[in-house]
Length: 115
Image 1 (spheres, rainbow, N blue to C red):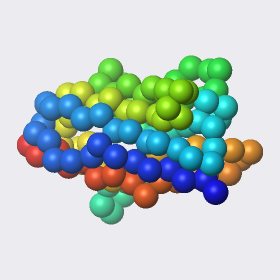
Image 2: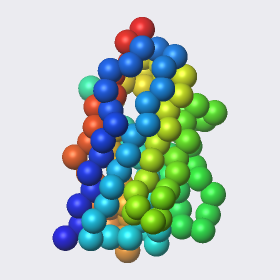
Image 3: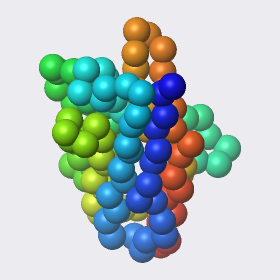
Image 4: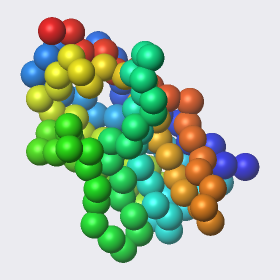
């Protein structure tokens, strides 16, 4: 059974930093494309960053230069380092793993940035 558990969200002031973590069980994050998505109230879920196996990372234009996605194969975890946070980064952040075209999701972790 695949399970993804996100953590690290919280309330932070604009300009601050947070590091999100996603720990996986039942699936290897090192062998598959992993990504972080977010969904703000009243908006569609959007890609923040993804990390394909053996390929380069992709970032949304709105987070380039501020966010960094990384993977720890030994811990079977993926991270999202978020710096210089802005109020528009406020959203529920989800971890995603793609396996044979099917996406697995975590329950999400809330990030709230106060201006």
